[in-house]
Structures are given as structure tokens and as C-alpha cells.
Length: 393
Ligand SMILES: *Cc1c(COP(=O)(O)O)cnc(C)c1O
Image 1 (cartoon, helix red, strand yellow):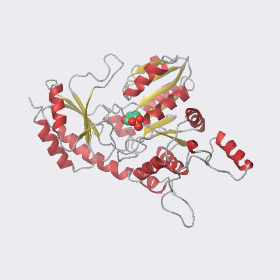
Image 2: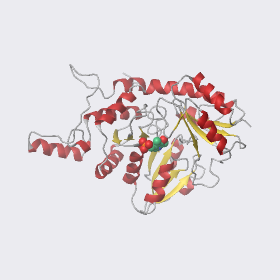
Image 3: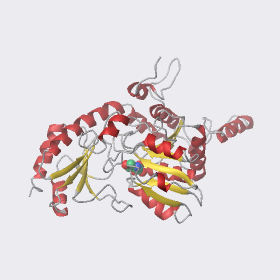
Image 4: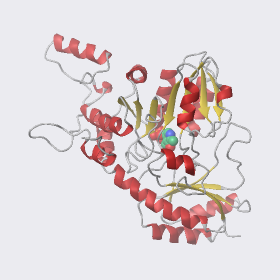
């Protein structure tokens, strides 16, 4: 049989096997695991050092978590997945697993802002040098050093959805011996974008967003292409004591079952709203890679399987911050809040931090990031229309 499509993988992955079984895996709550003999315990310990599956102690994983990891590994097309208690925990553990004092890291300038803080407040004081590169890679090759050990990318970016030519980036790193390439794949969430297939070593997803999909669980996941990278990340996760509760793993698994249908609807709604926003006088730019006018459109068409519910707008430069706040306050169906990827619509004014002078974001007008949820798109447009009256000059 040919490799199953994502809709089949999320429906059948991680399910109990056997002659007479529940459809869903049980929530296996435990801290302590008991063994019938020292021989069994010693065998379990030895297997665990090699990161083989099997119960040992609650912190070391659960059968519910294993089921979720299996679905995510299949979606990402990787070797294995390690779960974390949040997306940021997955990111920080990956960074710590890949670098040592004296190493150099290259980070994409469009990265999730807390990554920048982690670099400035932890990695650099620890003796790891960090430089930033533009998503268009124009200054990437020139910054690679003999000590460069890790490239941290995020594609598309999650504020302005800058695309990065990942196969080109990987090809450049391969000319310099082995540099680990890790990608924050939260935008694609294992479905819309496949960094491992494009040559990256590690894909990191904040499961909190689309994987969970219902705004009720914090979760992170790291999937690697090869066993070597998996062992490095899993060793560091064990050292630092990362663990995920089986209840959270269960809720995430339940969310993942509908990932493909939810994202199809998020994309349909977001495209309708984005095209409508393009027609509005107060809106200067609509950032959505599925729009032909978006700067990343060609790469998005080449490398992505679809788009999600994230749409950002830049208002005309005449629109003030106070008007922008009034616009967001006036929205009825959009909550004001961080995060995204749940079933509901959200709106948030934002200011992308950019390390590079004159980076791709010129920062002219006020920016608002919208997450287009699963409401009726006509209702969302009517809501945006009544709120936009407040920013029309
Ligand atoms: C939200 C987010 C994270 C962090 O995930 P948490 O679960 O909130 O810690 C990381 N990267 C991106 C791109 C995100 O949007």
C-alpha cells in the first residue's frame, strides 16, 4: 500500500491493537510503575537508556504519551517524537541539546520572540555566540563559522509568515560539515509543512496551537529525522526532567484526530477574510502566504500543503495605536488574547521584535494579528466591517 495520507494517519495512528480493544488508548495516570522482579526492573532500565519504549517511572513517559508521539512522528515523517509540557520547553531543550559553550548558533530574524530572549538571557551569557539571519537568506552563508553548530529557523514565521527557502538553507549548511538544522514548525503543525522532508534534522511544534486545537492544553513536541538527534534531545529532556501528563497527552490526541478537517476550514475562512481585508481602504497590507500578493507566495506554493487561520494586517500609516486598540476592542467574535490554533477567533495588536537593522519588517503601520477561527466567515467579516469604521480616516 502507498504511504497513507495525513487524514488517515491522524485517524488510525496511536490506536490500541488487539482482538477486543477500546478505540482510544486509556489515560494511563501514574508516577510509580511496579515490577515483578529485579530482573524485569533491570531490563527496563537498560532499555530506557537506549530510549526504548516501556514503562519505568511516570516522568519517563506514559503509554498515552507514546500513542500521541506515534501520530506526530507519522505526520512529520520522522524517526521519533519527544513530548514536552509546552512549545517553549521543547524549544529550550532542543537548543540546550544542540549547543555547548564556545559554539555558534544562527537564528532566523523572524523567530518567535521568546527564542530571542532565550538566546540573549541564557545562551549568550553561557558562552554560546548567536547571530541572526534574514528569512530571505541574503546574509546567511556569510555568517556561517567553523563553530556554527545549530541553525534555528521558523518557517513560515508566525507574525508575518515570512517563507524561508529551507532546501537552500540546508544545502548551504551541508557545505560546512554537519550543522544541525532545527525548524519551529508550529505554523504547519506537522500537516501544512514538512521540514524533515525538506532536509531539516529537527522539527519542533507548539502543540498548544493546532495539534490540541481547543485552547485547553499546553504541549510541545520535537520530532527528529534520525536516531542521533532524537537521542540528544531525549537525553537532555530526561536530564532536565521534562514530562507531560497523560491527561494532557490524551486531550492532544483527541484534538489531533480532527486536525485535517479543522485546518481545511481554518484555511477556507481565513482566505475569505484575507481577500475581503485586501479590499478595505484602512488596510495597507494583508499578510497571508496563500494570497498571490504575499511575498512568500511562490515558496508557499512550492513547499506547503495549505495555509492556516493566521492572517496579519498592517493598517495605513495614518492609523494610530489608539485607533488600533479601539478596533480590537470593538470586535465581537474575536477574543483579545495570546496564542492561536484553537477553534475560536482572536485578535492581537503586535510589534515584531527584530534584531537586524532594516530587516524585512519596515514597521510603518500598526499591525494586528488575527486568528481566523471556525465561526461563519460571513459573521467574522461583518464583525470586522463594523470595527473597521473606527479606523477609517
Ligand atoms: C506559541 C508558540 C510557541 C510556544 O508554545 P507554548 O506552548 O506557548 O510554549 C513556539 N513557537 C511558536 C511559533 C508559537 O507560536
